Length: 253
Image (tube, rainbow, N blue to C red; front, top):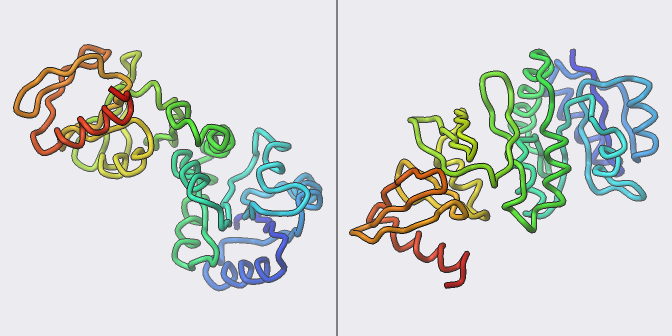
């Protein structure tokens, strides 16, 4: 059983979430329901939950304030929110679980299963700390951090460290500035979509590059780029127009 606390300032929100969990997630044991951060802090200290469902928008102290007071956060968190796209971006970069209101049953069940796996594996949860950091950086994506899932859990890196990403079937290989190579268990298409607001561009079906790490472009049918680690990557003919447009947008030349 997963010891769980629900936190939401709306009584209907608490009631709805409790019913959904009772019907769909018998592995969840609800220890307490809290309507504000102050009460939640007391109950968390008393009951030591393994999982917390946390609403963000609450009076006086919101969900972020609560987590900042607890940092480092000693439990798994599933956010329940109606927040804007920039917060969603921070969620995705940080690999934390979130549910949009109204909560969908199947998404809730999947989120609980992932939390249960992390709890059982005693994986150190860096995602919430990364998320709190990213919240302050959403207007400057190059300064954000990225949680990369691996066999042990997650690796946290700064986006600025990534020179390029390389496709390897359903995996993505991250090549970092210091020569480190990380393999993520997600496809390059997923990272292309995730990083579309930052300075990354898919210049070839197999390569996603950090435009800040391009030091030279060599003309050709599609051309090629030379990166700061001296890697040379071909720009496919189909991607050239998008690539040039992104470079002009980013560097205003």
